[in-house]
Length: 624
Image 1 (cartoon, rainbow, N blue to C red):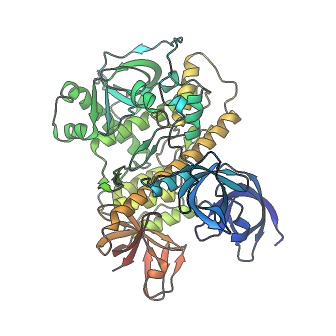
Image 2: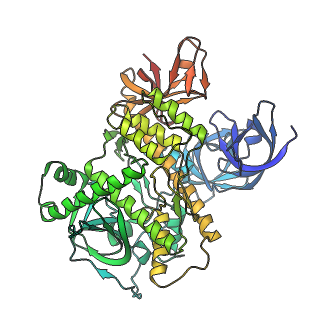
Image 3: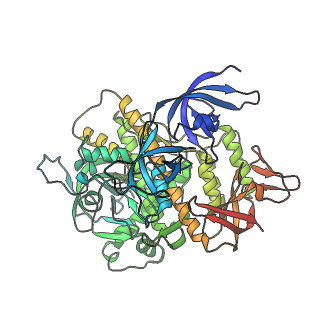
């Protein structure tokens, strides 16, 4: 077939070749790039290329032309070629070494073998920062790979001088009992909740108050531009890289107990059947009565235990439990999944780089309560804005395609569950599947596979349902300290409250920004994931040779992914490490098929830890 000119984005495989993810391709296809054609390019580059389709449907890209480059820095180690210094760049970013230029002001000159971060300039890189011997090289590589900013610019790191500004009217809620519920380690507290007793009709009200960051961060200011570039806070095993500097995120805007704080409050009236019958959104002034932890609240909700912090607010917490139950019943009627974040909690000591904590994070009744309140607030604000024609970045999650539905049925069957979805998957059928698996030991593995199969949600000004939650409308409103999308929603609410009325319900500029922050947020998620893998690899270094039980959660051309029961750590069984091969992947059944046996998604396996590569975050397993 004759070549066709296409554009797309470069990705790099550590083995030296690459792929071109084609723009506007309805099948989401990628074209293979041979190593020589990939040499002058970096992961993330936007290029134009000639794409040829072979008889078997495989695509190949040649004659690549760089259109734009978003990557500004790279990470690597200094090597020497023909007497000159080059940077051996992270092989997931570039498949070749780049000529290194060291500024004359940078003395002493870094030695061969040094690890550096360098700025990309045309066909070479310029040394910016030489890493100290004590640096966490594995984490540094990941952060550079995904272009994650480490520190805020010096001009933003300290609180600026305050200037009097006109303040919008606020409702004074300081006399209403309000509490915050977070992990004990949380310092950037951006949500508080309260509840009132039921009235004669059985209806009650809940108040979800969110830090009004928009009142402290002017649109277009340097602080705002930095947050827009970051798009989200990044949570690593050894630290948090906040979207806003600590003086704002942990002090001025954090909903600290006993301190007056500016908020946007969503007040919801909930009837006895869990239906939300009225929505009110307004600016408020609150004073949190107590800073509670999930464990404290769960102890009260589940066992009636009280302490000095929960005692004064125990009646209000009881009404919060009532509201949570009502919201749960209403969500069950419409379907969707309550994604419980069962995952491995890994803590890395920043000085020794040793893993000090490894434990599965299990959701408690307190986590469920907060999740239901926050989802209800996000939905309510989405309904409130759309009813008024106010443009905002909605969070949209599409219904799975029929092929994905069939794959889900196969995966569930491999785990031992029958679904009977029919021709299409509905939110109610999805909710029924979650109820089936709720008490199964393999539930964390099933949910991890399910989340991947359902695909990702996206930000867009074109409002549409969120399939995974079974929500007709949804957006992000409840974490403006941590997510830029939430700050955009707060500004949309604020403009409407100030009397502005939109002329364009679908502004192109806001749509472009929604897509951009979505991409940046996904980069941050990948960085978090890779750093967790590295931390898990460090933990497993001392367990080489030990045996574990697990479930197969991934069948890939390179091998099997296995989630270990208990720790929920994921390792890989390479395809060439499977006995009685050769093996091939069956896309129809999601199995690794060999001459005498096969391995399917969900199958329980006993594995031994064979090898660990900390730098790559790779845990290699073998079947026992």
